[in-house]
Every structure is written in structure tokens, then in C-alpha cells.
Amino acid sequence: MATLSESSIADLLQPYLIVPASILPQLSTYLDLLLKWNARTNLTAIRDPEEIVRRHFGESLFAARHLDPKIPTLLDLGSGAGFPGLPIAILCPEIQATLAESQNKKASFLREVIRTLGLSTEVWANRAELLPSTRQFDTVTLRAVDDMAAAVTAAASRAIRQVVVLTSEANAPVLSDFPDQSRISIPESRDRILLTASRH
Ligand SMILES: C[S@@+](CC[C@H](N)C(=O)[O-])C[C@H]1O[C@@H](n2cnc3c(N)ncnc32)[C@H](O)[C@@H]1O
Image (cartoon, rainbow, N blue to C red):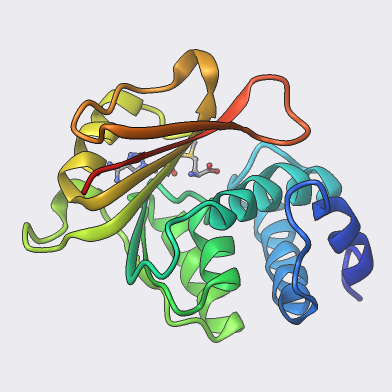
């Protein structure tokens, strides 16, 4: 049986977006796989299922809502257990998403979720900097990457149009090559923001 009912997941996500009913089964399966894997390997420090839905799924889907419409390609740099890239891919399957994650166990988890959910998302199981130099993405997303300065440099060099960062106001990076910027407060948080930085 699923850990949380689909209606509980929808209720928990309500501050972030009204979730289309069609994706609730996928979110539920993703949550159950995350809890199963997290019991034996450290994918996320958050253990409480409701908190995972709010913090990880909620923030990721909030970011999805604020992406430029109809972006063809997206790179989630330092995807970890898939945030924000996998919920974005679930909500917006028309986006060709690539998840860059350098830790093998996390990359294996991402592949398992993608296979189970039948998504066409790509996993790059290495450092994003090692992607072929020809690989560019319309949007690059970043959340909770350890060395944010290095990650922002890598993200900026891969982004054609937009870098999207989920962070705190105090840690918001400078993205000087992306002059069109906005900061939106993330619901249910004290100081978390969604920074979108675009050019063109
Ligand atoms: C703290 S986790 C956060 C993951 C996820 N973005 C989140 O918000 O839950 C950071 C992850 O980024 C990965 N990472 C950091 N720098 C990276 C890089 N340059 N390329 C690929 N993965 C990277 C690490 O292996 C780690 O799993």
C-alpha cells in the first residue's frame, strides 16, 4: 500500500500548486521508491514522508510552474534524489530533461524512478562539467548543490536562456550574464526563494 494517499499528497502540495490528478500516481510511486531506497542509502536527510512531499516535491513543482513556457531542454545540475528535475519532468513530460548527478548510488536511484515511471528523462552519472562541450540546455536548474559558486559557473556555461535556482535569500548567487532576474518567495518557508535569471 502507498505510504500516503494521492489525496493527502495533493493536499500537502496545495500551497505550491494545484496538482493535476493525472500525475498523482507517479508522485506517489516516486515517494515510495525514495522512502524504500532512503532506508538503506542516504538520498535525503528528510525522512518524514509528509515533509518530503512538502519540501522536495513542493519546491520542485513550484519551480516547474515558473519556468519559461515551452522550454525544449532542461539540465538539473546536482540532481541528488531528483530535485527539482524529476518532479519537473513528471509535470512537464514535453521537456527533454537531463539529470546530472555525480554519485553513482543516486544516479542508480534516478534511473530506477525514471524506468518505473516510464519517463524519457536522461541521467548523466558524472559531474555536469564533463558533459560534452556541445551539450547546451535552454534552462539549467540548481538546488542545494554543495559548492554553489562552482555549480553556478557550470550552470551559466550550459544555459542558453535561463538559470533557475532554489535557495535562500542570503545564499542567492550572482548571475551577471543573465540580466533579467526575479525572486519569488517559496510558499511555506521563511527565507526560501526561487531565483530565475534569464537572457535574450
Ligand atoms: C545536497 S545534494 C542536493 C540534491 C538536490 N538538488 C536536492 O535539492 O535535493 C547535492 C548533489 O549534487 C551533486 N553534485 C554536486 N556538484 C555536482 C556536479 N558538478 N555535477 C553533478 N553532480 C553534482 C552531489 O553529488 C549531490 O548528490
